[in-house]
Image (cartoon, rainbow, N blue to C red; front, side, top):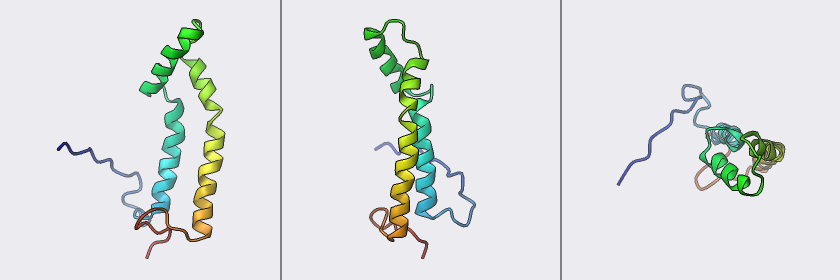
Length: 100
């Protein structure tokens, strides 16, 4: 079985590094940035499919169309996190919002 590589958290040395809230905030930021990064292979796949219908489309075309989705993501996911925090709901199995 192949092991997946481990990624060092940017807040690994921080006293709140074990907090699920901090980790979820980092994931939310990464999610939004991954949608429009030119390093995403899906962006080039969507460009190839888009060129089938719009031959003049360039790299900025799918990026600008996906940029519209950034604002709802940046509003919705922190709102879900805020509701979970306010109602003290668990973020997942064995992942409480507050540190013990």
